[in-house]
Length: 302
Image (cartoon, rainbow, N blue to C red):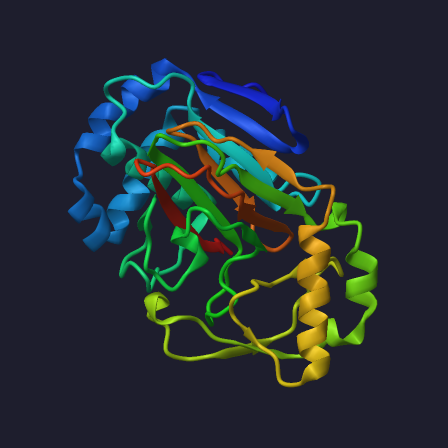
């Protein structure tokens, strides 16, 4: 990969498929002024301002960062990167991280509207106690491997997650699995049920009232296999579909090729949602546990 001034590029310790992009202090300092031009309300209500701060970030790398990220995220052999400030300073607060995440997202594509949050990004907190209808906020349960966007009409090509803050946390590592590394892929893909249409719904908190139909496995325009699956949302139509989904779930969770990643505060992981699955390990119980994450998901620019 080409060297980019102000950026440290390396392979992740846990997987050669995941690329680390560390942003040096010189770029972070130069981002403060253009980022301060817009508050979060402006970014939420005026979509073009999001492209303005994205351009500010890309310009500081001579427009090389956008090309590098697009290459990584679309390359089947990688498809995932972790990006963030090399050093956390007093200038890097939650608002700065939202803006940095916004800039990264708009250099690789167009975010979808997040119905749960009512805007292009969602912030959610994981705490000791929870009464929600989703595994997303349940700290002490395993969040099984899945892809995002299974229950919506719009394309969900990529997913971005940023760790805004965490306190009193043990466990809760991010789990990742590349579809091509899944040892049970052949068995599940070659079963014709995996290419049948399944009905996909969602709980009330998602604010999506319709349901969609699609198979678990599809092919892209190059004939490569993609997956769209999450354990909570399929509504099997018969015993055969129900049994298939159980075997699929078991096969994913039993995989020995999952990559476990401990993201630091301020770090962002971006993955191709077509062939990377993600999940979360349970946290160690703590009454003062607190983690805040930001999520953006969207489609590639044609």
